[in-house]
Each structure stands twice: as structure tokens, then as C-alpha cells.
Length: 74
Image (cartoon, rainbow, N blue to C red; front, side):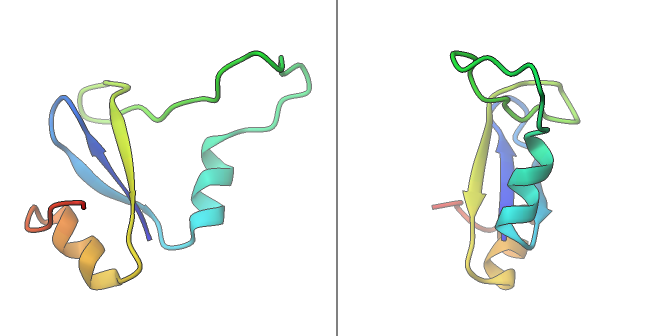
């Protein structure tokens, strides 16, 4: 599972249960993409910060405890 944590407000959320689906949805394909352009970053839906850290978990229980604030996020 892929989760995210905002560095500014601390909001934690689950992005997707399938890693390939979540990453494909966050990077839209563009025909005019420049090779030197940095990849798009996630933005917190609560405060708007771009300091979002992506965390991956192998277990559903680890992801739920992370979102509930009881997990460290490694």
C-alpha cells in the first residue's frame, strides 16, 4: 500500500492499495513534456504544502496504524 504524510501539517492518508496505479494517476502523460522538467510532486489536500513524503507498506494493518497516528512510517 502507498501512504503519504505531509511535512507541514502532519496529515496522513492512504493513496492506493496498488503501487503502480497510484503512481500512474499522479503523473499524467503529456505530449509536450520537456526532458529537463522535474517530475510532478504531490500536494497536501489539507494545507497545500508540497512537502509530502510517500511511504510504502507491505501490510494493510501497517498502513492503517500509520494513518491512525500509531505508526512511525519507518
